[in-house]
Image 1 (spheres, helix red, strand yellow):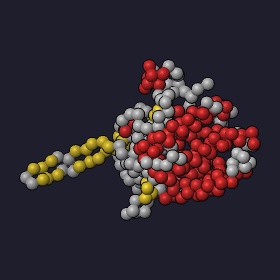
Image 2 (image 1 turned 180 degrees about the vertical axis):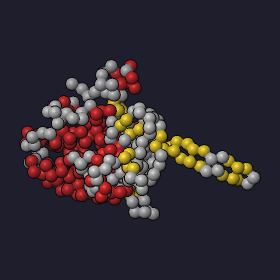
Image 3 (image 1 turned 180 degrees about the horizontal axis):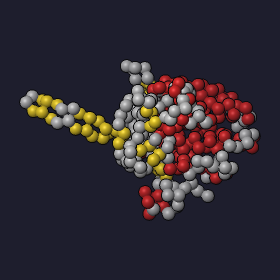
Image 4 (image 1 turned 135 degrees about the horizontal axis):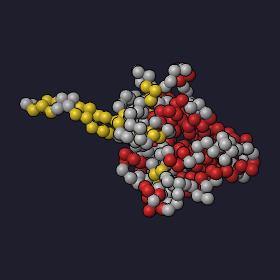
Length: 312
């Protein structure tokens, strides 16, 4: 068995979208619900896929972000080479959290498994992959010296954009009319906040499982001690992000795609804010805003277009 590509068939580059693996939602969707219906075994091909993705992704992390050899990254899509760099225009793929989203599927699979010594190899593999992701965000995120807030980016909320407006402008005797244009680069979109929050919940829990279940040959003391520090650090990184890694809620109660109110546009909309309403395990929040427990529906800012919807 192999991991399904975008169209879930394997006729390679002659298929639609060149038979790519799309990591900005499509690969993950193939595995949603498999644990709850007792089909966790279908994740088996995903383990070597993600392990290889993380190994090849070290090159992209070093070349694109000057990260250490322990870090890895994969963006919006890849192909049979599992290249983690940008393989299309930035609007489509410039998302440094897409790879870790795919990796978190391995953790989700363990949540529906009997955890004992027979799963030692899976625990070690998943811990190794997520460890490299934590290292990447330790090195990739940065603190804005003017505000003290940590950020990701600049990057994109995949396939989403916003409108930038310019008012009527006068230069000398010449007047320029107001106009607007679309832009897609931003700091700390909700997509990034959601996935780093998930990583900040998954890695400490996985590390604890490994500490309880694995012997010294599988999980040496030096690695245990290092992972304890990394677990604390990724939680701190999440808490230091805008809104403590929660998608922003605007004054009108709308959950925003970006930390500042920006009007979404374009027909491919990633509704990454919807993860805010999910309180399950890996996706459990570091903290929740007071109104998240309200019985009133949470609104999300999105385009009225009914096309491509991504629920990250």
